[in-house]
Amino acid sequence: MVAPGRISEIPGGIEDNTHYNEQGAKAVAQMAADAISKLNLKIG
Image 1: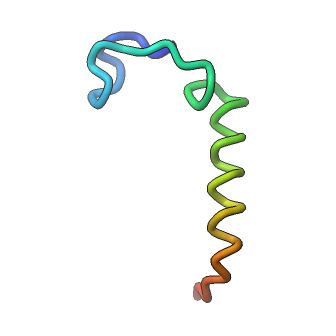
Image 2: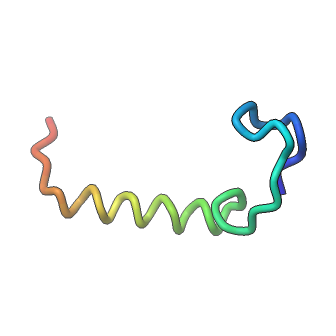
């Protein structure tokens, strides 16, 4: 849960059991990293 006033984009707060907790955040980050990896971008 994100308490009201904690995040400016969600002023009223939200109950979110997905990416607003450590396990969910890691899962969402892994999905993003996997998708970016599949783009085969040449970085560096």
